[in-house]
Amino acid sequence: MYRASFLFLTTALSLHAQSPAPAVGRENTALPAGRVTGHIFCADTHAPARQAKISLVPLPEENGKSADLLRRGRGRGEGFSDLNGAFVIDHASPGTYAVQVELTGYLDPMSGIDLSDWESLEPEVQRHLRATGVTIRGGEVVALDVELMRGAAISGQILYDDGAPAADVSVQAVSSPTSANRTRTGERSLPAVSTDDQGKFRIAGVPPGEYRVIAGMVQANVFARDTAQAVSLYLNTQQLYAPGTFHKKEASTFKIVGSEEMGGVAITIPTRGLHLVRGSVVRQTDGIPVVHGAVQLTDASDRSFSRNADITPDGSFVIAFVPSGTYRLRVDGAFDATDASGSQPPKVSREYGPVEEEVTVSTNDVSGITLQVPEKQTTLSFQH
Image (tube, rainbow, N blue to C red; front, side):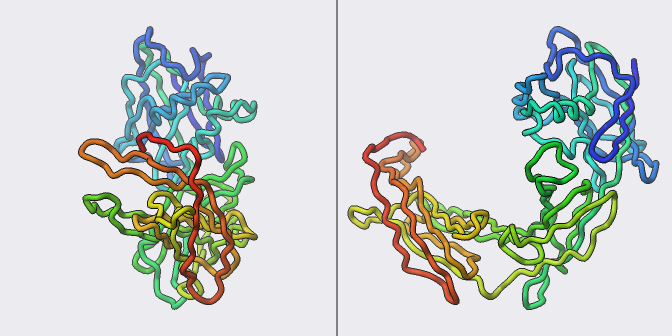
């Protein structure tokens, strides 16, 4: 048995006493399974990390082609620490793995890694992945100690513009592409939390970096879709950035350093100045409603701002939470389908081409819009 010790510094793990690896990221079925045992500690309190979840995630090959292992299953072995911080993972297949540890308020050793990193061929990303690795050989018992660093926290309150607290609102912190906790460019969302009855929220376990804080506003559409009049519920979540804007370019950013508590983040949800955009989608040839598809509304001056709505069975659509401005309204991929019959699913009977129209929203809701879609020349018939 050999012992590997992990020390989590910023977003990386340091691995000690690790010998050369077998085939990286591959499960070697010719060798017996191994066992991983050890302890998890909290660096700030030096106390055991109790009830922490630990997972072994297979590392990719040098060419990054084994990312499908991650898609098929988050890890190839997992366990939970007990009240002494001890854990055991049995039946671990031989190979090299990254170590993931989840404990509220603490930084996961893999917090700077996502699926795109697994597929990357960039040397810097590959080195980062290798630094998080632990190697298991056939029939071997590996001793592994993990020390977790406490993350920062972002807290605040969400109110409606009349001062009422916004309870049960989903809140997320999203890192900017240049955040220090990213091994490559691109945004990353931390797990969402919900506001309490006073509209307050706290996002814990935040790695260093720059973040935008986003509240989710839910639009619900309920309608019957099939001949049996089964009721369907479609939820459409719109993003509202702190301090209270729908436009990403106007959002505040918050720089997180170390394990600080970033408090006082305020988001105001507007109840006035938001409008509905209503209309219908019909066939260009005869004006008959088209009953399947979606309509997208995009800000003409800010492509990152968009709203979507499903087409209902009568061909209508409603887009909510639209502030004043000029927009492009577009429908693409609309289609008609036969009704479901018994065990047979509905089949696409007609497909329609795209159509786009400019819409201006000022002080009132907009209604009466008719989008006339042209029928495609080729009629398809396949299961949808």
